[in-house]
Length: 341
Image (cartoon, rainbow, N blue to C red):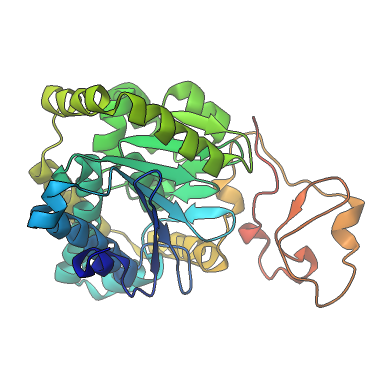
């Protein structure tokens, strides 16, 4: 492994990189220090990984035999892929009327997502692997890749309309190209969070794995893809030629998002602050909950065996208990225990 190839691996604070030599796959994990959101640091490090991969390919060594055929984006946060934009930061910038910083943040998101969508302009395939919740920019990140593989228990949505905004870093563009305008607008304007099986039926998720079988599904997909990689990557290029995603389109929409954000009133920002609280807990508010779902309460919920028990844990009924409910400070920020299939 050359020194230039090693540069791809960091060091990073909010990202982690692993290379699978057998699959020629580079796994890039979100590894948040605090909230599982797209902080400026995380975005910067994600972009640095992309730049390092591109630089290595453009070097003489990389072009001779490029060792990265697949780039997989995943998360190291239990139960969460990514909860989207850094809402705490965004609320502060909106209150200060700091347009320049909002534009910088939005541009950072667009740069990251756009390169995923065009597979970094390299002969590789981008894959997002979602094991838990993917909201707002987290969902935009997931659908920006060439393929989306998720586990059945995942929850995904674009709740921005709940606080009078819209997903401005590519959500509309990615959804419309994959699902069509009507379905894309319905997802965006309702602000609902949907279950994995429902999104698979829609066609948003390409491969839906059983819970706990996601890594196996990703590796299985890569093995099958490798057998016809030449033809499949050509189809990838054809699709991008047929319905190209233009960088300027994403930037123009991001600027509309900034202008819209600066028009939010105090009531909108107060509602946005509730999402900040949920984000800080690494969970999903009751308002995010997929339609028709409810909290599962069992006798085991109240039988915590020891005050120092660590979470998450699984009760005797097989339900996931993410935290001690009796100590919850805000019932609006209760995490999902079960989703509607």
